[in-house]
Image 1 (cartoon, rainbow, N blue to C red):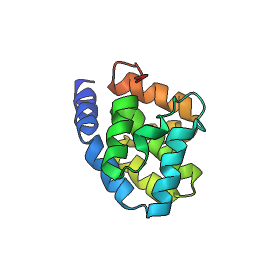
Image 2: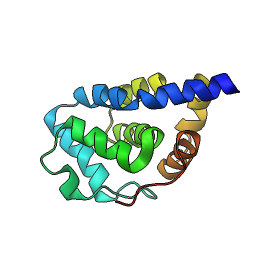
Image 3: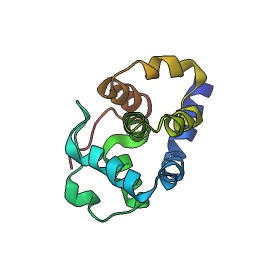
Length: 132
């Protein structure tokens, strides 16, 4: 159990680099669409990032805002969900494969975005969402 917890903590530390690498694969239009999901409130149960926080920002700022607001695990789960909704399933699958243990993949694929966020924030954070 201790090894699993240490492995999760290491993965949480690697999240910003993993998310940035993922967003680097999006073209400018895909990035704008991705950001619109974060700001529009389309993901039920997940508080949106204020539009002004992502207006005219690049990939690094987008990653920083996601990690700040949702925590590392939540940021990964939300990214996977948005990539799936925008039909970028291969990219979502690679991110999921890079972050989640194999034993959790079937569970996570069948959960809603809000359930996934709750699971991820309780696994790797205090379970609190930032309302800033």
